[in-house]
Length: 208
Image 1 (cartoon, rainbow, N blue to C red):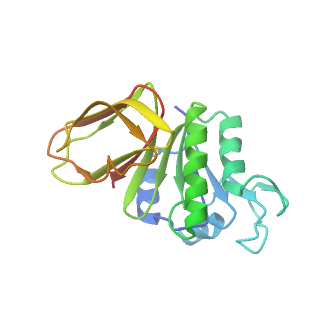
Image 2 (spheres, rainbow, N blue to C red; image 1 turned 30 degrees about the vertical axis):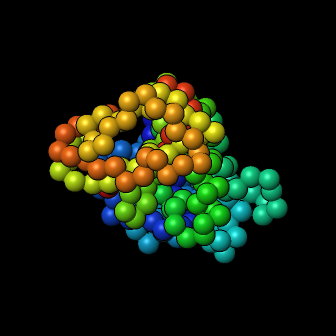
């Protein structure tokens, strides 16, 4: 599956990105506005720099650039996700989309859910967690680990047929709404785990 890395302007987990890049995990890397500075600091040259570059403060040189006006109806991250999808990406790992301004984080989680619902395999990486989007019907397998927190929430009005297996606390075909804390702070318990959903969209917080 073709995988793109998108690097936004918020907190950048450079160590995790570098480890993934060294393993050849990415077919292309897109710097999203201020994410260009994060990549530059990490010694990585992106395949494309995209955005209005109001956060960066200048238009990058020496790399392909897609420049957009500052006054527009879509965020730079949304434009980057569209670019990845148009270029044939089947999966994206998004960095620099969490932390910082809470409104940006909320907007990015909504965007990631939207693109997951369009068939893109979406993971966001923060400083302390990975966030996977799971669209029903679907399942997510988690490797065995002795410890770690896993939280599962619905981004739909309701997600039905939610199962959590192999974690400390199990769920068996329950309905989760987007107005409950049910799903918060489950625990890995030394066994491989499985999360599944029949309909709706889940956001799954995983330890790094």
